[in-house]
Length: 438
Image (tube, rainbow, N blue to C red; front, side):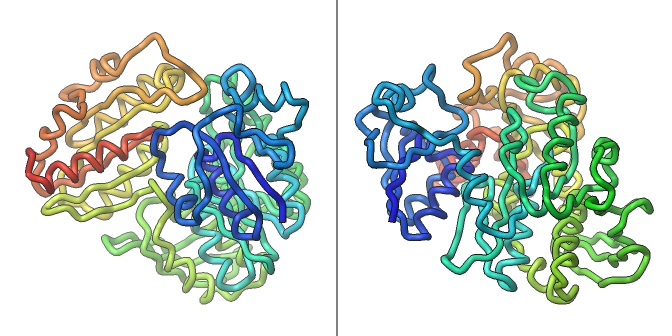
């Protein structure tokens, strides 16, 4: 049994990896800021010790794993590692080494990778011994695991540390403007990642950028709705109960699927998972059975019934993701007023996509905005939430002091959306309403 210390243990990937190592019998502890993050729930359930950052947490007999967001310039523990002449292993490097012991499936993409990772884990785990690491902080492993399903993040090219057996690419679009120069820069990163897969690259063939990847044609498999795809969804039907479709593989019928999912993006995510199942020779009826049991991952389209209202917690933080969530809400709740409470994530992304955010947010029936969430990667910016509000007619800026504004939307579907801490606004609103303080 080894002893591990995680610098930045509440990070989405770090918390999941810490859980995995704990499940495998290792001693695990870690440090982070004292602010509550939803990712720490899994750690607390396992009794993993959570500490505030402190140089005294660093010990020579620990295997030290360093979160990608931290370095000597912003973290006292990283400085302590250097001062003591120790070595900290970057998260991505450790994960690459860990994955090499399994039949590995890495899921990458600008959008949808967390949900697709969760869906694949849900489908595969009841059939084959499977460990998984999901970007919502969820990780699970057993000593007999043969497969390892994990999320691969493109930010700062971290996913180039991986050489998985199978790679899924859900889509490619410009994002992370604080790092990537332009869309071509993003494309080059994904192309390098795709070519590092050793067996197959499973690519969303309805995505124009993904189709441009220069990958050995013997390794690539395309999935989607369009006729160019190797694995294709046909005869699609959407209802308030979900979606149904037929899957054809190289123009031959493979199976019929009925799934409780909403939105075109969930059809695409399902096809990626179905393609892996087909490659592993799993019966389509078995794939459908287990895929239909998927109830979601944390902070992705999580629905709460609250009085006459429906409250939704969603992680969408890019214009394309917001559009997909709006479509899914309209499908599931076509008769309800759609109210958005949106928190932009990072100043750089807000500035880069300001007009795109305004255009898509204006499609909601009512739009509320909360202050921009600055992540660990930046301290501030040149714009404020008022700049975005000025571009959306009728929008209002929301704070903890005026959450009662939401009460007037009787019977609405209210979506709390963003990659920061907007879920805390949801929790506060629900708690205050329950306490009848509004």
